[in-house]
Image (cartoon, rainbow, N blue to C red; front, side, top):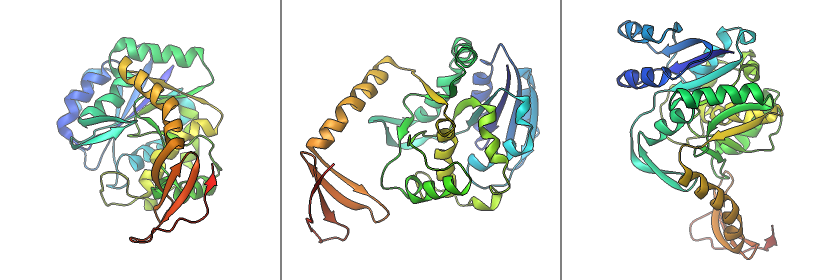
Length: 298
């Protein structure tokens, strides 16, 4: 197999971390594409130790790690590769984020995404073997970070659906994606990114942490939804038996709990809804508006 690895290098102090992880790649020929806003020649000596063919590309400071990945996809003949791995540096999180109901902070998010593929040579080799023996698998990523879209963020609603239709992928059934966008997938899936209708100007130069309704956040979803749209399966990798059991149990029990009693928000206006025993009540969109219109069973 031939592998294309893309690493977007924003935080240079994480260079040694990623070199250590990339040393787990074995059993295949691979090219490493490193994107930077401004190339730092100092890193060349470090990456030369990996034994890969390393290509450095300067990229516009747009779209976080998303536009740089798209730029690399546009620059290569994907027919020359079997698999594509997407990686990027990720900053320290001071606050505690929740992913599939479990807290993560510090470098936990980055480490989980990377270790799902590159924890060690054994992990990477097992993924290669899986792709070889399961032609129906299109993408592999972290089990912990593979989550459903919410019904409140614009990048999960009309922005996502409209962009999928615009680029010809059409509506999507599975609304799950890899939060954090680090994965390994079949290269041919991303030919759609080479279309002229996807351009640099679509992506903002503004940097906002978290969900902010940008086109970058829309494509964070599209990149890991595309395999399912193309009738491939997604395989998730567990880095913790406890987390896997928790996520499985939560996925089975949570729908029942939501049916019994839940309060959530939905849509562009973030309308609040109350659900009791399957009956759903709209609580209104404005502060102080506590309307309870007709209820309906879901």
